[in-house]
Length: 131
Image: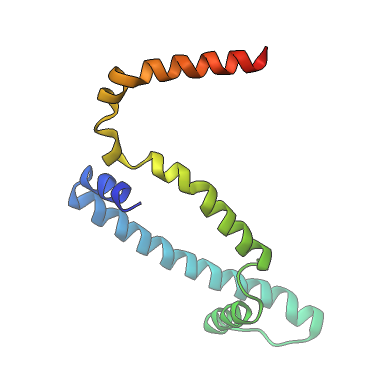
């Protein structure tokens, strides 16, 4: 993964990298603002009318969200999601190895020397197994 990141960064200039970092920071701030106002709006729309509770402000909505995260965890995830993440990371491990560009330096030489013969023997083996 380190090699992949280095390869991707090498192909970008510093202005592009700084631009993407600033965009990410601005997007995160916008998401927090929208989340806070969304929770505040929903609470103030539903809770006073349904349960007779008082309305809340923006920072109270952010606090309510933080409390919900502490009490209930991440967005409805359960322990089985952790298992799925582990399985996914194991499955993607082979995909990440294909993206390691440092191993591709000798590919052309390998293909010229052994690749075509190895491929033909593989085709012969698979066609014999089908028969």
